[in-house]
View 1: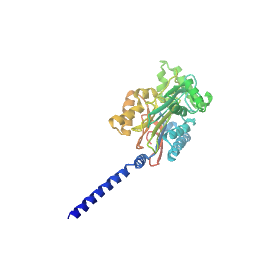
View 2: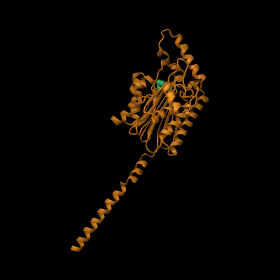
View 3: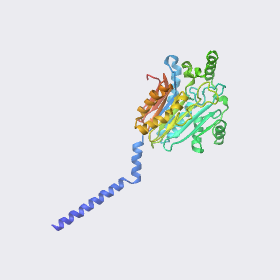
Length: 358
Ligand code: ASP
C-alpha cells in the first residue's frame, strides 16, 4: 500500500513539472513574437485624392478613367511595398509620390495657385508606433513635399519647417529640388483666373466668396493622402497639398498640421484629411477621430462618422477623411458630393470610388 502511495506521489510530481516546463516554452520571447506577428500580420492601404463638388455630370469618361487609373497605380505602388514586408512609412511615401507627380491632383505637380500666381505646397507624415511626425509648409521648390516631411521627422529635432528654411533643409538632405515653374499647370492657372474674375465682379467683396463658391470647389480641392498598415501592425498617415486656390498672406491649411490633416497612433488609427482646411484645424479632425476611439472606445467607423457628419458639418466645414485602424478596418467619410478615394483591404480587395453613391 505504501509503495502504491509513493508511486502515486512521484507521478503527480513528475506531471506538474512537465506542465510548468511546457508553460515556460509557451512564454519564450520567440513564441510571443510569433503570436504578435500573426495577430497583426494584416496589411492594408487607403488613399484619397481630394474631396469636393465632384459631380458625374461635370466629368468626361476620359477624365474619370484617368483619375481611376492613377488612383489604382498609387494604391498598387504602396501595396507592393507592404506585400514585400516593407514598412507603412515607405508605403505611404511611395503612394503619395505617384499622386504628387501627377498633374491630376492638387499636390506636387498640379498644385493650385496662390493669389500671387505662385504654388506653395504643404505636407505632413506621422508614424503610429512612436507618435513621431514631420511637416513642411509654404514650400515652392521641393519636388516631393511628402519626402521633405519625412526627412523633417527622421533627420531633424523639429516637427514643422516652413518656406525658405524648409527648402534649405531639403537641399541639405539631397532631396530633389525643381524650379517653381515645374508646378505650373494650365488648368490650375485658369481656375485661379476664374476665381479672381469672380472676385472682381462681386459687389460686396469678401474673400470668403471665392473660398466657398461651389462652382470652383472641384478646382481648389484635390489634396492627396494615404494611410497604411504594415505586417508589424505599424500605421503611418501622410497628406500632401497645394492648399486652396487664391490663398494669400502665406495661408497654411490643415494638411501640414498634425492632428488636423494627418494623425497616426498604433493604439487607435491613422487618418488623412481633405477639405476646407480652416475647419479641419478648428475641429482637430484627425486627432479627434483617434481620441474618440481611445477615450470613448468608439469604433473607427463610429468615430469617423461622428466627426465628419456631426461635428465638422455642424461647424460648416466641408471635406472628408480616409482612415484605417490597427486591425485594418477602413473608413472613408465625406460630406461633399464626391471624394477621389480607394483602398486595398486586408483581404487584398481593391476598391476605387469618386462619387458619393459608389
Ligand atoms: N485641406 C486643404 C487645405 O485646406 C485643401 C484640400 O484638402 O483640398 O489646404
